[in-house]
Amino acid sequence: MKHRLISVALVTILLFMILGNSIGCGGGGTQYTLTITSTAGGNVTDPGEGTFTYDAGMVVDLVATPDSGYQFVNWTGDVSTIGFVDAPTTIMTMNGNYTITANFGVDAVIIGDVPDANQPPTNTLPTPNPTNFCAPIAMANVLEYWDDVMNHANAQNVTAGLIPETVAEYIGWFMDTNNNGSPDRGNGIDFHSGTYNKDIGPGTLDFVRWDATHPPTPPRPVTAPNFTLPAGKLGYNWIVGWNCDTDYNLTLNLYKNDIDNGLPMVVTFDFWNPVFKMNVTDPETGETISVHDWGDPKWYSSDPVESWMTDIGHAVTGVGYILNWDPDGAGPIPSVDWVIVHDNWASTPENVAIPWAWWTCLYNVNPNA
Image (cartoon, rainbow, N blue to C red; front, side, top):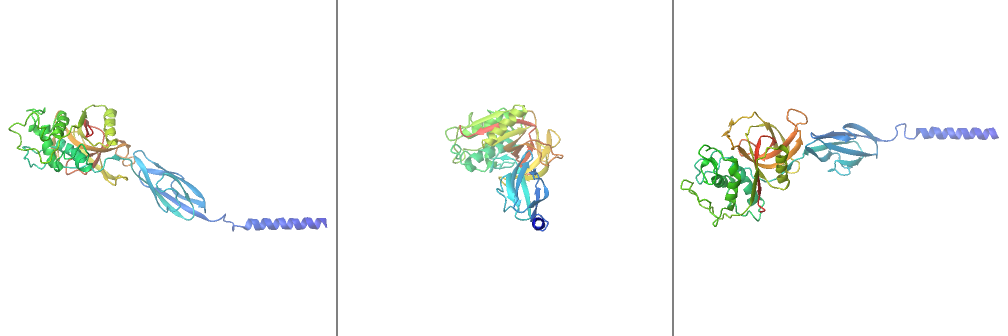
């Protein structure tokens, strides 16, 4: 009897073992695949990129890591079970076969809606010589920004409702551009073309202050264009500072601090010969940034015609920057610090990204005086 009981017990154990091993049909349960890709500017570091297999219901960690000069934007594709589609570190639950993409964009700091006026000025005063007006045009963009875009309380009607190309004519007189303006500036008989760097700041202050009770000082000479105060023009006391230091980090930090504080500024360069490389899109503003590298240094450019001499360079409007950026992800375009500017030639696009080099002076314009 005892031996028989032992035999029955052994048969029962074996039966349970056989039945137990047959549960799941030998496949270990349902499994799903997850395919992961990324756009330029970064990669998925956890679990990686490619195709992975997971058990149904498993929670998967996702980590997207941007390259220098880029930022994570979002996850797209089969994202219904992703915890946070806008977070670079998140989770997803495997309830099916999924394909997802990590999207990256440039990590740009950019001031939006800054005007982008182009040379030449309208020549409505008329201006004796409306060529080489880059500095007045670049500064007119800044003044129009504070007056017409931001409606700043200390800038109302400082541009009298005129378009930037006309404002630039007045500013050009106060800057003595082409030696056809205020005798209070330093553009002498030997330099007729363009604007002295040292005249940009004082000329801007004089124009901003100009109104019915603050006529130009000293008075305009009889050889000046026959223009009067534009209707509605109001004057203000602003702060316009300038720095012509050659220290890379110092001047870049000055530029960066202004942009971080929402202050577009004027930047002058020893020469201006940008060579187009590629376009990228700023994911936050949706604006196109046109990446240019520097061409060969030279003191004369034939397209468009412009020449530079001692103390006279090319002026643009600074609106943004991207630090330590490799635009093409390891190629011929250098990984350096880039500034984003509005050039004032019709042949160049609105937002030009150019490596921080060949600068001459920075002009800080602050209406909060």
